[in-house]
Length: 394
Image 1 (cartoon, rainbow, N blue to C red):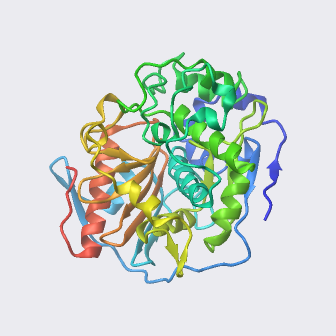
Image 2 (cartoon, rainbow, N blue to C red):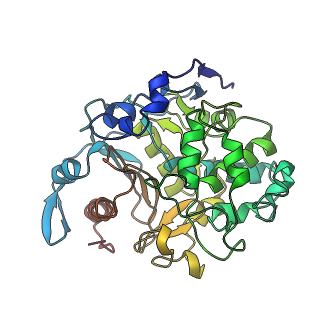
C-alpha cells in the first residue's frame, strides 16, 4: 500500500490572497468539497476490499427543541447550513441526505479539526505496534529538534489532552494569533515549523486545557517520526485500507515547503467513510471481528474523570456542554464527538449504537449557538433511534 502526492502544482496565487473570502458563504460550499483543486494533496488509498454499509433507510420524522422552539431536521439543515448528513444505527445506514449544492455520496468533505480525532486513532495503532513507546514519552524523544522550544517538556499525553501549556487562545478572527500565523503558513506565507517553534508557553504542561491546533500538528509529526511514514501513508496502510471504504481519502498539504499534512485539520473523505470511522469507535475498535484500533485506546475517548477536562470545566477555549479526552469532545450521557470548524461533526454514542456525520458550511469558523443547536438535534436523533432519553443541550 503506497500513498502518493496526487496534486503538487502550486495553488492559484489568488488562493493565498483570498483565503478568508473563499472560506465564507456562499463560496465555502464549493471550497469544502474541492480542496484538492486548490492545494497539494497526498492520497490515502482505500485498499482492495469494499464493505458496503447495510442499507436500512427510514424517514426520520422528528423534532428537537432549541431556544423554546420545536424544529425539524429540515430546519436544522437550513439554519446550520448542512451539506451532508449520514446516520448509522446498529451498523446500518438508516438516514442520509446531502443538502449541500456540491455534495453527494461520493463527495469528499474538508473535515478541518475533525482530523484531530483521526490522528488520535492512528496514535493508538502506533502504540499497539510499538512504534510509539508510551503516551508519557516526551515530544523530544521523537522530535529532538524541538529541544529548546516551549514544547521541550511536553509529553504526548499533554498534546492529546490539549494541556501542553503552549500557545495562545485559538482566535481565528484576530490577526497575529498563533492560529492565524499557522493558517497563513499553511497557505505559503511563512513556515509551519517556525510557527510551532516560536509558540510561547503560558502554563506548565498537564494543568490547563487550551484548545490548540499546534498541539495536534505536533502529534502528527511525532507519529511520522515514530513510524517513518507520512501521515497519509500510515493512515492508508494501518486504517483506511482496512475499513472497506467507498473512496480514497486525502490530506491536503501545506503550500510552504517542506510539504506537510495538517494532522489537526486537512483530512478529506466522504461522509459515509467518516461514519465508518465512527462505527469503529462505537464498536471498541473492532470491524468484522478484527481489532483495528486497540479497545483500551478507543475507550480513552470516553474518559470523564480528569477535573479540568470534565464537561463544563474547559474554560474559555471550550463550550460549557463539552469536556475533552484524547482529541475528542465529550458530552454528558456517554457520547463524544469529533469537531471541525464551520460545522463538521462525527458524533458517536456507543451505548445507543448511533453514529452521525454532519458536514456543514457555516459562515464563520466558530458559532456557539449553531453548535448548541446541532448537538440538541443529534441527541434528539439518538433518542429516537435508541428509544431512550438523552441529556439534551437546549
